[in-house]
Image (tube, rainbow, N blue to C red; front, side, top):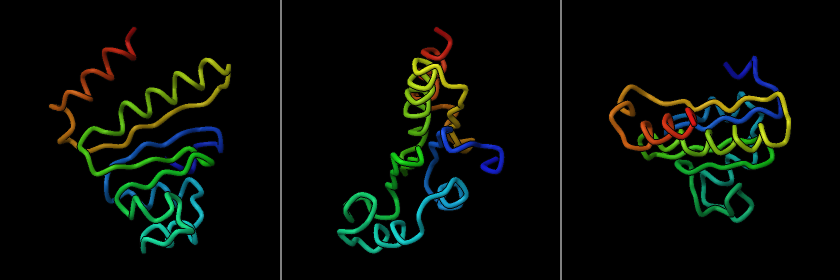
Length: 111
């Protein structure tokens, strides 16, 4: 999937998604620093490997089930308002289909 995305596209993913972040262009040194809790990491070492966020390449991830939908939706709205022909992708597992964030995001996207 990431091979088809551009630098302006966004990815919001769940836990165990380092491969999406790396494939979308996350800096490995910043990723490593964040994973080991170093001040030089993406979130100054406070997010660790479970809560990666890189606003430069538009990648976020969290361990909360269905958490990727609202940020991806917000990014999609922002891209649309900017007039860009970009996409926002929410990556999740089958366990998210019964979560409120999933249904709320679908309802908001439909509007």
